[in-house]
Length: 273
Image 1 (cartoon, rainbow, N blue to C red):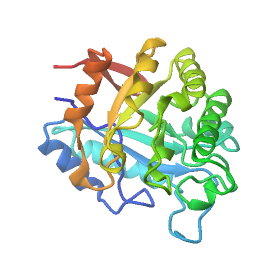
Image 2: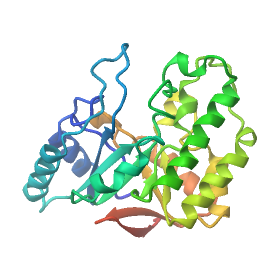
Image 3: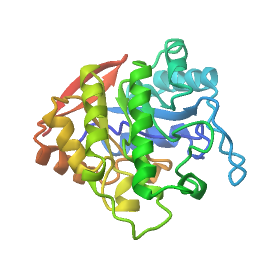
């Protein structure tokens, strides 16, 4: 059994209403050794008219103060670890270091929710206007490459192929080979910089497989990638640890005998039982 869920959101994220205490108590009930909070922050996020409350700005001072207090409160039952999911795009990537260095994070996820601050959100149909779906997703992967070139201030890159879950045409079939050239460049950069990736199980309910696609995970391993975390991307306590049996199966299938957790921004490797 995995000892923790490395990607969880509370009400500190614009798209969740879950109380931190409920998350901690759920993690305790599941027998976890640690509980991670990785709430959203997207620097300069352009609020869309269709979702005016989704600004993804994190009150870092209140967030850290609350979680450090909860760490003390629950220290005899579970270890509360402080993380953040930093949404980045090429215009904001370089600004991450000063922000991350200002707070006592155990773990920093970098995630691409945008390819640019202007017309770069694959969640909305206008992102796809005037281009094929393959070109739209190649643009997404190219922006991730640029992000990794611009900043080292993260520990793992989250849900690498996040964009593909929002294709407006549900009959469109994602084919790894259409993007392999870009993904190889991206993964080589991550390996060279000593950065990891995650198995994000939230994709299973939406597109039938975790993020990223298993062929991407295999390529990461072939290129020498060693750091791999597992997270549900839960926004409600009921989804914490969702589909972790399938994540474990994929880790073994790819050839991993361990997975990774982080403390004080340093990786710790835990053997699969």
